Length: 447
Ligand code: 2IT
Picture 1: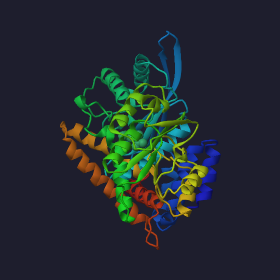
Picture 2 (picture 1 turned 45 degrees about the horizontal axis):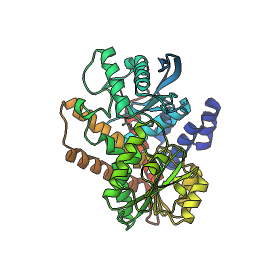
Picture 3 (picture 1 turned 90 degrees about the vertical axis):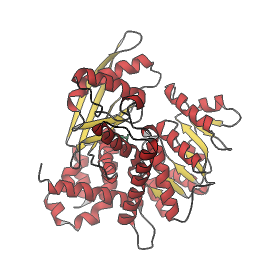
Picture 4 (picture 1 turned 180 degrees about the vertical axis):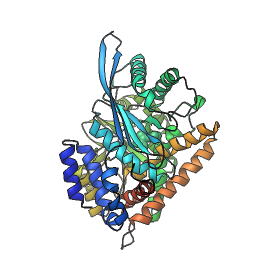
């Protein structure tokens, strides 16, 4: 396999799909050497088969807004790879959603899910529906219209969607309600991230952020460092940022910045429990403005318009918002300000140039597919509880989540260990995920 040849053919087939091509290139560059040591992979054309989704559903979603006007959006479900289990991955509602974005996310999800140690294939879906400024009734009508198209292609043994950017517990509720009505199926296993009273796992809302901090803890521990007393800048203020801020604070670190599309809030004294709770109110308002934090807590939080979290001096940077939200210039600014660790919590949160800059400067860096895998892993635990018709206590879920994150860290070390004793976590995560999916594909023949 030659990465440049495969990429040239993909670029010709899928022109302009920049996020998808970026995600594929990153993985192929990491696995090239290992792949070429396995002629059986090449013979079965594993890479050529793995980089294309199994199938994509595209559909129109019509709904009626509060003024009575008809609205039209596009909906998608990308079923990427089912070699190790039913398709699994979130739904993203965001105005910038395109097939390229969902293909990159589905591709990443396939390797991430493989890392979790649980039997889940990879998928992603969503819509260019923009939740910003929408009323609760509009959100409900959109979710119902979306499910009207999707319901026949999902199921507990087939494809299990969950939340992602713009899709949280409220949306999963509306989606599940409509699914049950259409499918006449009332078992709880078709979506994850459900409410705690109707099949949702305890700790699923916290899991992505908690898992990310467990991973960061193990990464720091291996490097002879600890979280206690360190300053952390977080981007975003949604579900993932909320979970990360909660666990970081609990483990003794100080979260000194959160950000939004409008700018950054600096919190020199460290974010408090009250402020962390307020992040949920801000998200539920659908206003999408981080300035709301400094309006509510003017003494503690100082808002600066147009700036990113990466302009704030910190030890550790945690991108928790969107792909490519941290670029080369941001990486250089962080390094100049003394940052020595960046754990990517968002999917592909850093550009390839930013990652290269971190690695060249000896900054501890770990990629999203390893760091944020606790979210989907806990979705997997929710599926297990649903299949068994039981619910575990929070301590049990937390212990399993921590164990999984520790295992993912160990897998990264196993496959990413460098001759000088440091770990290339990008390589480690990509090779570990790839080996599992490739072996599963090989053993199941040409399908
Ligand atoms: O990116 C992700 O891993 C998610 N949005 C969670 C997916 C899931 O199925 O829980």
